[in-house]
Structures are given as C-alpha cells and as structure tokens.
Length: 447
Image 1 (cartoon, rainbow, N blue to C red):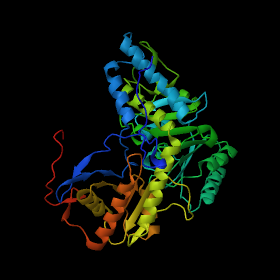
Image 2: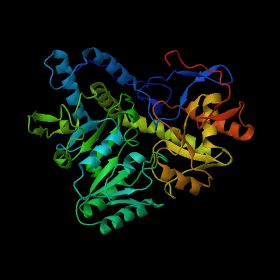
Image 3: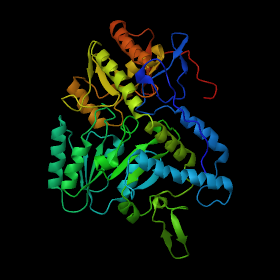
C-alpha cells in the first residue's frame, strides 16, 4: 500500500535553469531587521541543515494519521507504517545506486552512521582518513591503527598519499574514509581514484556523502565504494533520520549497535539471539516519520538532478565571481588547482572577525550564513592560514534549493558595504557569540 502524495516539483517560467527546482518550506519567510522593518530571509546555510522540501512536508502531513508502530503491530495502521518504513530501504538503495546485496541501516545522521560502522569493524582494522575531514568522519574510529593523512594540495597527491598509507599499513582489514565534498570548501575529492587505490591494496572504502548527496547523483557502484553515510537534515528532510548503506558482512558480524527490542530474534533466561539483518542495529522504536521523510526527499531529488545542478552551479559562479570584488576577501581551498565543487564557499575578510560579520549579515541584512570552524577544525585552521587569515574561523556561504540570485547578490552587496562603511548597529559578544546590543527584535510566539 502506498499513500497518494503529490510530489509535483515547483516550476518557474523565469528561466530554464530554474525549471523543476523542488520547492522548499520557508521560501517566503520574512525576518525582522535590527534596524527596523523586515525582509525576505536569505538562507545561505544549507550545508549545516537544509530547509524542508514542500514534497516532504506534504508527505509527512498525509502520513501522520497513519503513523503507528512498525514490524510487530497487527493493526492496519501498523501495516501501513511498516510498509513505508521497509520500502524506504529500497528507495535509499536506488538513490545511491547500491548493489542488490547491500544493506540499509537507518540511523540518526552521518555521525551516527560512522559511529555504527566504527563499532562494526573487525579487530585490528587499520583506518586511513584525511585529517581535514568533518569530525563525523574523523573521530569515531577506535584503536591505535588510525592513520590521519595531511590533505595534500593536489588531487593526484591525495590519491598517492592514500596509496602510500595503505602500503605501509599492517596486514589485516583496512578501511579508507573519505568525504565526497568538503563541508568547508565544497570541493569534490577524487573518490573513484582513491577507491581504485584501496582495491589494489585489498582495502574497503567508506564515503561521507553528507555534503555530496544533496547536490549530485551518487552511484555507489560507479565510485566502487563499500559504504555510504548520509543525513536527512542535509537532504531537505529535517526529521532526524540518516542511513548507512553498504556491505552487510561486517555489520552482520558485529555486536548490535544498541541492545534492546527489535534487535533481538529470541531472548531466554540464559541467552539472546540477535537479528542478522539491518534490524540488528536498529533497536528500539524507530524514527518511522523521519525515515519516510528521507525516502520522499531522495525520490524528489532523484527526479530533478539536472535542474538542481544547473541551478546551484549558476549561483555558485555568481557568488565566487562577486567575492573576488570584495576588498580583502580570500576564499579557502583544499586544492591549488580548480576542481569540481558543490555550492559551498568559505572565506575570510582581512580585518574582520568572521563571527562579527555573520552577526551583521543576519541582523542588518536578513542573511543566514555560518561562521566558525564548521566541525572540521583541522581543515579550517590550515586553510585559513593558507588564505592569509590570522584566526581559526571563517565565514561559510552554502547554496541549495532555497537559494536565489537575489540572495547571492544581497550577501555580496552587504559584504562590500560592511567593508566600506562598517555596521550600522553596535555589537558585543554574549556567551561567546556576537549579537546586536539591545536587540529590539522579538522571537516568534512559539519560541
């Protein structure tokens, strides 16, 4: 049984590059300015959490009356919930073009997925990971056999570094962990080339697709990776679900990620028999609504890749060209030569604190950006130094389906005005964050 949900994408006759761009909730949101009045919100922080797709919101609203327990409920609503929950495993397999035998384990997010995989590694597994990874991919791995590789300044050197690390690794199981797209710079890593090196050494490879999956079609088979981790809140499905997709053997042999109901096949006074499928690592009542939302988002994006990529790449080119005209602005880059990238750009502006800049952009211009080290502290510190910055934080602008040309033009104009004339309001640090002094704006009633 399936629910009849209208997932028709929003079409705009304005220009070919914006046709069939799926609509997001909050596209017409207006926010107050500290200087008075309000303005349409320019959400340029998609890399942190993307807004909810209208298709996802509609699907969830239609499903909620049917929401019930899954797997063990005899009621009809439970059968509906179970059908949608299990069907989403196939949706995720198709979304990443997985192998027929690959398993799909539902998690909370990418961090949760990699912690699950880390708990499932065979003993004495050597893990090789670039030190500029997001903390979700950098930190979960246990034991003394974790090799962090400094990220080279060229893609070819990055592949060679993995090759050398694997050649020096002790015998036994080995896992290479690599991101698809940097959450700091948006640059794409040479995943297929690294996979080929891993295969040469008999190693497996895990792909952090958190930043890649919302922007590009992914093929697990073409990239030849063993595991993919992704997050719903990056994929326009902010209901708390993610997934780990990949080979079943290590997961099947590992102790359950959580001990509890759903992970068990049989419990007696003396023993426990655990499930061997994905349920082995999904103990407790699952996030059925979040899982369904994730599946709807993947189906919606999968039907619109060409339009999505054209839309984002046009805005990215507009943004990067405009940043070149901002005095003192320097973009962060992993690689010296230009490479393919998604719509994420981090930068520093000489003489301006990134946190202060972000606060001014928000309070005076209605623009949401990210400042800090982006849960990739090693990467941010190193790249800021290369860019000529004197701190350990930067400003990040990240584009997505909710971004428009007006949003890009507004942030570029705002940066030029701030550099030229400063802020129109006084700011001070409150609990370590810059904020307008005497901020007169009121939060919505539900806060």
